[in-house]
Length: 113
Figure 1 (cartoon, rainbow, N blue to C red):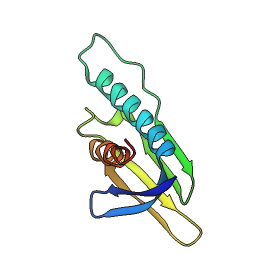
Figure 2 (cartoon, rainbow, N blue to C red):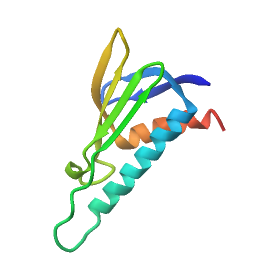
Figure 3 (cartoon, rainbow, N blue to C red):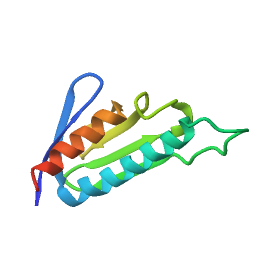
Figure 4 (cartoon, one colour):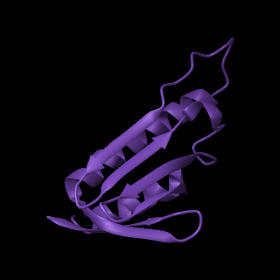
């Protein structure tokens, strides 16, 4: 069952059809990114190995792509994501805050519980 998710951006928001299964997959990717950022931000000894970028893609009612390079953000609270939402008529590419997108996905998933 696909319903609409609202994603709050730095300026404005976008709403599109999204399934609960896709939202759960996105949530897992975002939680893994938060864990990576926490590990990167933790004090450590010596140089760190660069973390792999997070790239999430979903094709459904629209194509959704979420990208983040965790090596450039000091913490999950500062991290921003590059989001692309497109279909055959429109393409939107913008930034969103990691913590806000995770909150949007959690709110969306609460409707299915």
